[in-house]
Length: 247
Picture (cartoon, rainbow, N blue to C red):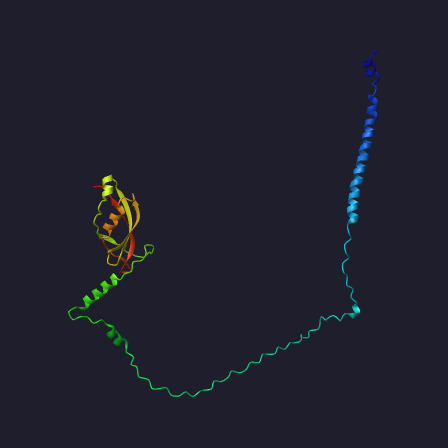
């Protein structure tokens, strides 16, 4: 009989291992759990023993014999009033009249009435000029002294200025030779008489070909009806487009 048949018949070694392996496995597991439990328990016990006990709270013991009697519930006596002394204020001192020597006699001043002041302020016109002529001259002087505000200042108006005289601008020679048309938007100040007092170029397309200069030259010759605000002429800034085209 060879070794293989003897081994399969008697099963040497197999039955010993199957008999003791479960027993030794549980014994080893119990020893491991015990060792780990001792380690963790010793660590927790060390932390618990190293802690200091909390300090006892302060307790105050009072002797009841030294305490006063409690206030009565039925006692309705009013609490004691506290007197507050008022500050003493000295009475105001009385003014004593002081004799003043008589002033020197002043010169009498005659105050004119409103009618007399109006007559004195009225302008004296030449006999050759009527009152209407004098009023026209005064209005013209006021219009000439009109101050032109900045272009960023908006003046309200109810009626827009209307062009009544608008000559066409000259076509720039450089643009005419090149055969280029253009458009210029100018911002002009129209005074109370409808005259163009100032011209500013806002946009020119194309720029640098002379359209800006010719547009301002022509717009300064235009004549408008003045802008109206509350039935009175006012000076305003107005943006006007000018187109240059071949005819």
